[in-house]
Length: 111
Image (cartoon, rainbow, N blue to C red; front, side, top):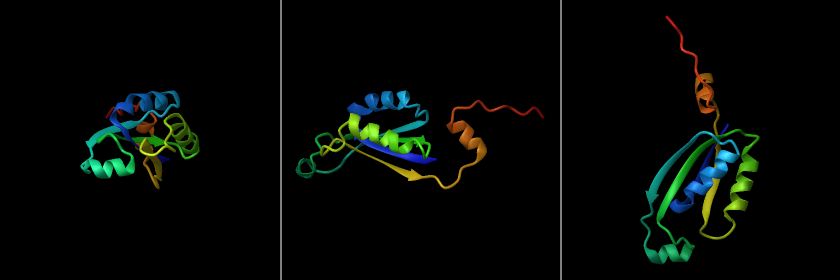
């Protein structure tokens, strides 16, 4: 398992989430932020918008390269200032947490 972190202009968030849905990336947490850099610095780095969305997603290790490739291709991340996406490996995860992240329904124990 990996955590996929995608940082994009906020207005692109619905399109990215639609693509994630099509790729069956089912667990996403979205944080909205606003950059604090001055406009000269933003212009230098080619970042027009300061309002960003940071999307944290859980993806399988085997699916991560394909998902990243789709993000970079569809949203032209090779162009300066369009967004950033990368993965971080998850070293260990409990069985119950994994089931929850996969969207599996948990059985309740009757005691």
